[in-house]
Length: 234
Image (spheres, one colour):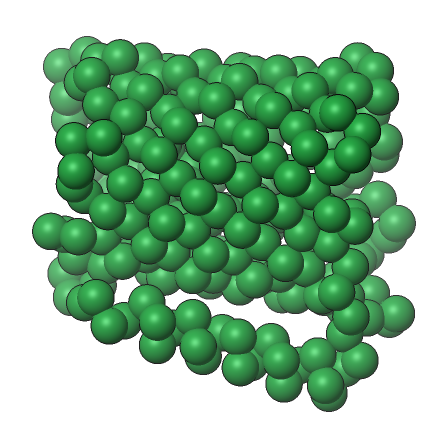
């Protein structure tokens, strides 16, 4: 399992490089973030480093490559992800795409996430939505996921956001809602704080988590968020 991620990452990078040569894609933006999210219910924190790079062509087609590495403060599990998004700019404000993410989780089966996504950015208002599947590799378990994230700029530096995720395997359902605020310093650096509340029909009570994320955006930034399970449910 530990050898799967480097192979997947190499394949994704090779495909993206080939697409860049074939379609004239150029680097247009990306981001690097470090986050720490503490689950107050279980008393553990997930620390995660993430990176994304966006390649675009003049004809509206583009690709985004994602990588991340996460580890809990208790020492396990560790999570490594590699993903790719292929998208098209439908209008200057609306982008539609498809994604695939491979997630390697220590002491657990790997996971594949795939589906469709939309992003709308009208300046102050930004909306991102997805619908897809998460498969546990080597097991019959398949989960359906749907999510939406909405942010609104109160000023050039400050924005607020809300999010909702729903994960279902046909028997049990995991739901998450979150609210947060983001401050941008104007030089690409930013900091975000977010509160998460999760309910799982397979567990007796809700979970509460609080996270902080430090980021650096360059160019246009990332087109879409990461689609690994732990990227969406930290």
